[in-house]
Length: 332
Image 1 (tube, rainbow, N blue to C red):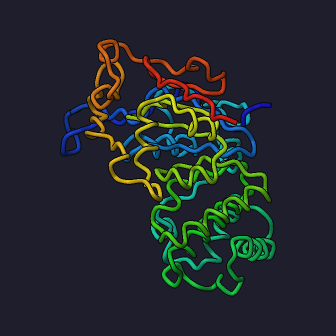
Image 2 (cartoon, one colour):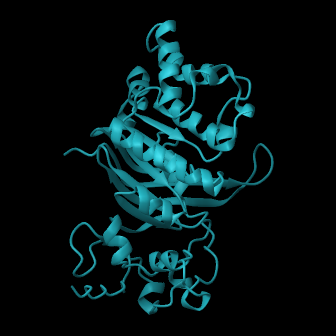
Image 3 (cartoon, rainbow, N blue to C red):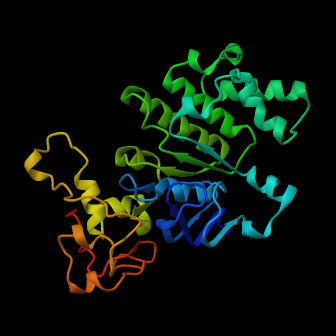
């Protein structure tokens, strides 16, 4: 099966300049480095990691909002950089984005109805009456009433605004939605409702998701596969259950250990020490070695490549010279 979206050795770097119009070049921010991912039709790939690890930047590259500095993006097998003009606009209809802050992503001057019709207007989909009908169907699909179409974003709660943002992302019938921390600005009681809505929409519409999150509990509920990022690089990639059960990278293990568990005392948790290094001057060798309890001399010199760890099959990939051992199988 052809992948819906492929990121092939993608990097995204940003120049850092001093103040003024002709500010001196002060360095380069290595936001994403040599990242390769593929998303199949109808699949949810979760992208997890600490703040500042490059998740959002990689999501924007996947959503065709940023052009990569190196590497290639393919959509339905077609290289995006070879497409121009109307063909590129048509291609972009297949990928939509739901941002972290629903209030910031919705135009406060537009009613909900106008916000939902705006993508249809831009892409000239249907007649004006058909666009109004489409807006009514979209608002109903996310659990709100057609009566809400005349209201404005400030008149809704945070959870309702995120539902509106999801409805707008559905307007053009995309095949893939990039969800950039869609739950982090919501109350805990509302997060589960939005998470269930996303699962229902995926099932009903055959959607694929790139689900960017730091919440492993939400990831476990929604994801089919999980990719773990650290300092701009993918360090582990595996099917959800395999990654959580048979973690291979020490960083992934630290993320899982940091999730509070009912009945688990503080003494049993092993919090990760130190901070993420600067993406302006990433460490040599393995970027995780300054914080890794298993680091050896090789880790400080040689960068590990992403590949299958011993005994875990070809679907599991890790970038580590000394991956964690596979835990013994549970007794029947």
